[in-house]
Image (tube, rainbow, N blue to C red; front, side):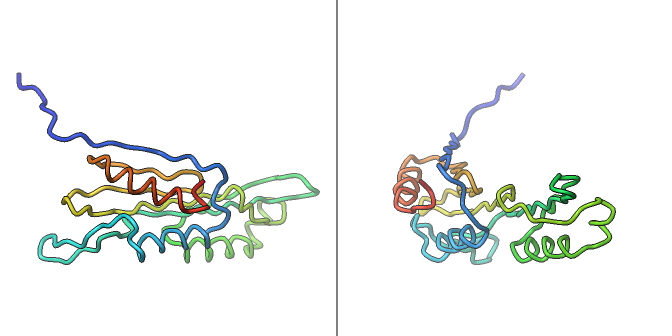
Length: 166
């Protein structure tokens, strides 16, 4: 019987944030700054004849939370997972304005921003040719699928200088 032979070593590192990122706007600003400023020194590349960006959004979703309150008591909740920030905001507004759901729940809809979640995974292409991922949530930053510790060092140095990532 054939054995599996290790070909590469892919690592993962996580930074837990002392305080969660306060709003989807601040979260998006952080993501856009990484894409626009390219602080990790990533490079564009060609894949199947197509020019690929150095850093891009690979996967993302945003979850709005709405509580239904009656006489000061929570009588129901709704979670709305959306693929983009625009959809996240539109879906949350639609839920707050939906009287049929509020009636069925037996309470008034109130958004619960402290319980909302944000997730964005960036795909980064290192000058060495390796792809790795930097995943942001409100509470963590995760570096995954990297091989060279210099990638971790560069991201850690950058994160140390970003106040939202303490």
